[in-house]
Each structure stands twice: as C-alpha cells, then as structure tokens.
Length: 124
Image (cartoon, helix red, strand yellow):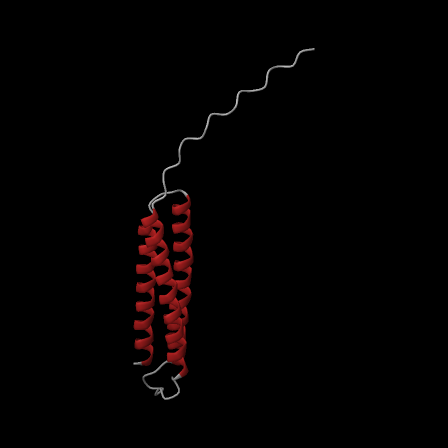
C-alpha cells in the first residue's frame, strides 16, 4: 500500500512591513504623558476636594464638586484605556499609531478641563 506524498511546504510569509521606531517612540511618549496627566489631575482633584470645608452653602455644592471631579476622572480613565488599546493594536498591526495616542491625550485633556469647569461651577 502506497501513501500519498506529503503536502508541499507552505510558502514563506511575505516580509512584514518594517516597524517605525519613531512611531513607537512617539506613541509611547504620548501615552506616558497621558498617564502622568491623569495622575496629576487625580492628585489635584482629590486635593481640591479636601479643602471644601470653608465653602459657603449658598454658592457651593459639595455634591456637585465631588460629582464633577470623580466623573471627569472616571471618563478620562476610560478614554485613556480605550486609547491605549487602540494604539497598541495599531502598533501590533504595524500601522501608524501616534495619531491614536495623540487623540487619546487630547481627549483626556478636554475631559479633565470640562471636569475642572464643572468643579468651578459647583464651588463658585
């Protein structure tokens, strides 16, 4: 009894597109700056809530201030995680990733700025 010949070896994979070192470096730096911005915002947000004891009740809403700070921090954290995942997926696919990292940084900054405006409106 004769067996069929083994299948031919698969063709070699096409050469993968080279990964841009500048794209990786820029993406990582921007994402690290995003994390640092979030950490600084969390510190100052919690720090600002610690000194609301002198806030006059006629013009100040402690609940509004707490809501503004924590909502902004949670939304910015969510945007940051989603942006990180999208950026890493783009890097793994060897696609240009720095625009996603930059968009993540900008969106987190806008979110934290809006939260700061909400805090100012609540205590002002």
